[in-house]
Image 1 (tube, helix red, strand yellow):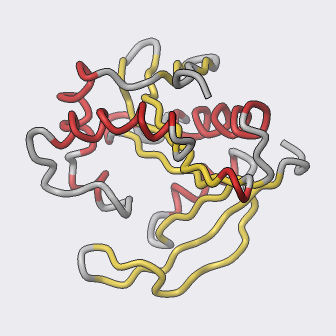
Image 2: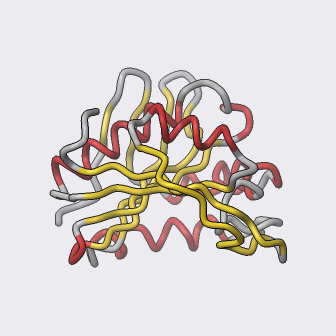
Length: 179
């Protein structure tokens, strides 16, 4: 694979992260409400974490492990992140994303998800893209549904977040599914 791609939608540019994005990543992802909706974002989000995270993206793409892109809006700049965690031997990828709190409920996650899903099927020749969200976060489920994924079930107590077992809803889409 070549360099990380840049994808464009009506309102967004999904582009590789730059080290200059680190302060904004720390501010947006560092909000407890954002971290609380994900399995992997730490809280508190310490100095240097964003730079370290951004530095992993190019290598992960080169190794065919993931495609992580900044979600940028024409009128607002960096609003969040979206990624496909790629499993090429199985021709599948897991979709993940986060949006900064000031940008919630503006359709950015859905728009970005549709774009990266299209990229995954068309450019990476994936057969399946799947995602999951904490059941207590139904807004993320609405994003997945609007992006075209189908609800496949609930895994009870599947993850621990901050020492608490979490039920997760699982969503998926196959290459041949209507979009």
